[in-house]
Length: 193
Image 1 (spheres, rainbow, N blue to C red):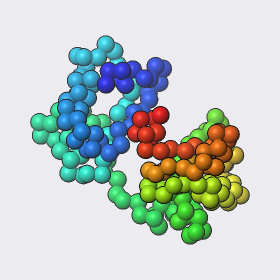
Image 2: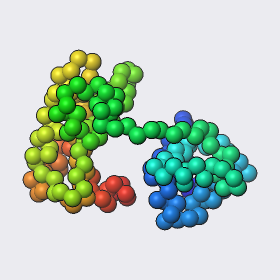
Image 3: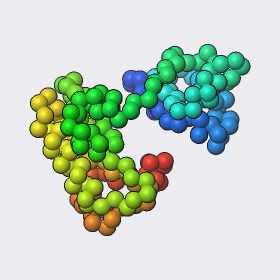
Image 4: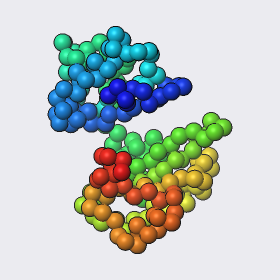
């Protein structure tokens, strides 16, 4: 944990623990470890790292900040985010074509060097299917449609394919030769490998 809090050197950096309840179930001491790492007396200086603890188990998330829980009083903000159903997601991403909206599982936006919003990546997730070139072609087509929209800066948009089962050899070959294609399997998702 101490190593994590040293990842930022010059400006604040965010470290995200997604589905924190599952991490805490696997390692029950984790909230206490975080508390010790964030304790001002344990720090050798202010850390610019901001921890973002996320979880869909609302009762658990509420308990970690209340009573005599280790992280009580340590939150700068407690924010309950309601479910974003498929209609709201399409509206949020300003996707008016229902077919395109139904095919996008992941959309990541950010800002370029000039501060203009740009589409960083779009992706598709298949837990039980081996993903192949057809999945890639569908994402590439969606990227082309989004690039054609006025106001969408998507010249360097990456295509992300997530699979719990794996990828075809043809798709792996294409990804090896095109850095805009990223294949994420279970190991890569959880270990970054």
